[in-house]
Every structure is written in structure tokens, then in C-alpha cells.
Image (cartoon, helix red, strand yellow):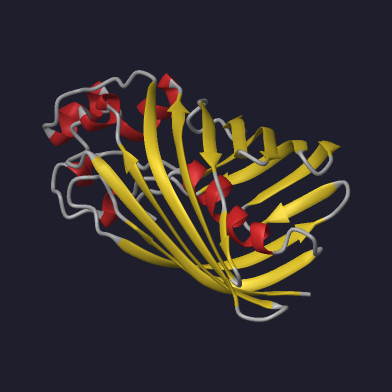
Amino acid sequence: MNYFKVSALAAFLPLCFAAAAQDNPLTLGASVIYSQSPYKGGQDRYYPVPVINYEGDSFYVRSLTAGYYLWKDQQDQLSLTILGSPQNFDPDDTDNKQLKALDKRHMTLMGGVAYRHTAEWGTVRTVLAGDLLDNSDGFIWDLTYLYRFSFGDFSLTPGIGATYNSSNQNDYYYGVSKNESRRSGLRSYEADDSWNPYLELTGVWAINQNWNATVAGRYTRLSDEVKDSPMVDKDSQVAVWTGISYTF
């Protein structure tokens, strides 16, 4: 993958299917992600992703996310969580000659805490997680508000939120070191921390008691700290996820 927001893939996408099967312990399925790349010369990509959701009393697995509940009831869930971050940059995946001279930015594993509160007025979810593999040495904080509308077998859930990236997180994925600048001809760049606001929309169709089809999308407005990077030539990113799942 050229790039995909950790919050989009590890926090947002698994919850789409989990919401449709929250009273059942196991959901399996298949899905495809479309993701835009903000990098110069980067190619938009399609990725197959398996859906593996398990909801237990003490722990859960949601595709790229797993966690242990510290507190769980119908309204509030607080957990320790680990999540895989597919965000990375590979110079072999860009058509831009200058970016081909840059170093790789690797995928990583992040860990932290997750909280979700559900009420009549909507749902608030948040994830605070930091790099566990010493790649970026950064952390992210994702905060979202959602409200679900039900229309028989179909539900529609719009959401609004923002992701905070620490300076280390941004600098690892968007910064250009002095050595890279000399090799590539790009100006050196050191990124600071930032907020990236987004809108999301999820539609779930309950085909029958066991089968569900899901389409989810997110539009992210990139912050100035990201847009000002000489690696980047876009001011926003769109991601779309679609799939089908079976709940046992």
C-alpha cells in the first residue's frame, strides 16, 4: 500500500461489520478497499481485506484490530487495543523520479486505548495509539461522532471526526531529511503535529439473518502540515470499503 490512514482502516472499517453483528460472537467475510494516494506520482489502489470479527466478553478481534476490555456494558466499552497500521511509503510505487530517491516508510504496529459510548443521541468513539515498533515513534488520536438511521433491513450511519497525528508520526511519513534532500533534489522538510478532519458514511444491508452487505466511505481533508510536504500533491483523500459478511 502507498498510504492509508491508520484510523480509517484499523478503527473505522472493522466497526462497519461489527455494528451489524454486535450481538453475535463471530463474523467472517471478504472486502475490497479503494484508497487514494496523496503522494506525488502515487497510484490509487484496490486491496482485498478479509473480514474477521469476534466479539467476546473479555476481548475482541476486528480484522486489523484486537483488544481486551477493561470495561464493557451496553453503553460504554473501554479497552486496551493493538492495531496494524498499513500506512507506508515505498519509492518503488511512485512514478515521480524525485520521490524514488527517498527512503521507505514502513508499516507498523500500534497500541493504546479505545473507548466507545453509545446513547440515543448517537455514538462517540475514540482511539489513542502509539507506535510499538519504533518506526515513527509517533502516536495518533482519532475522535468520531456517529448517528445511525435504520430503514428496515437497511441502515445508514453518517459520521464526522478528526485524527490527530503527532509531529513524529507526520515527520516519519511526510518529512524529507537533509540526506534525502541531497539525493532527490527536494527541499528538506520537517513536519509538525496536525489535525486531519473527515466525514464518513456507512451503509449496511441485512440480506437475511446471517448475511450482511456493507459499503463505507470516508473523505479526509489533509492538514497544512501534510499538504506542505514536498512528497504530497493532494489536499484530500477518499477511501471506499465494500464487502459481504456472514455472522454465525
